[in-house]
Image (cartoon, rainbow, N blue to C red; front, side, top):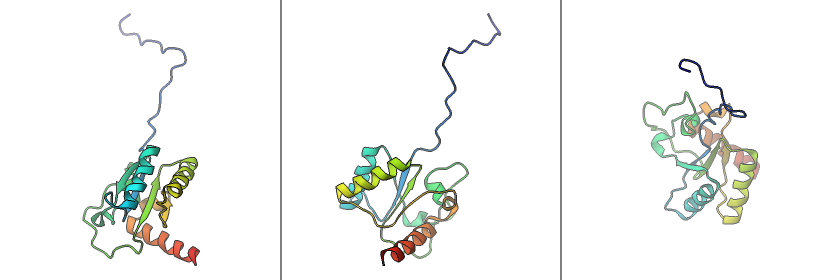
Length: 144
């Protein structure tokens, strides 16, 4: 019958989009370096996208790296001081189980990164350089 909506099949329901894919933002872990390649291999095996943070993009909000709605790259390239940490990993959108898996696989592969963080509602608006510095400072205090 024309003009009448079709009935949905029993058991079918709308599926909401899951949002941005889980990812890891990497600073100081170049793909051509041994440690950077190992970290990327662990992430790839887990199905997590690795994104490299370049110096020029350190002023971007952490949420922009995760491609969260409403976050865009900074309008001008970053030109401030380099972060305190030589390497850093920001895990975005991973479940607790995935975080535990990443940590365990990193240990097994011998590619443990010191300062790392999870993207949160609080830090997603922070420029990446601020987040790296804050986590690095906290890491240094806890290490002593």
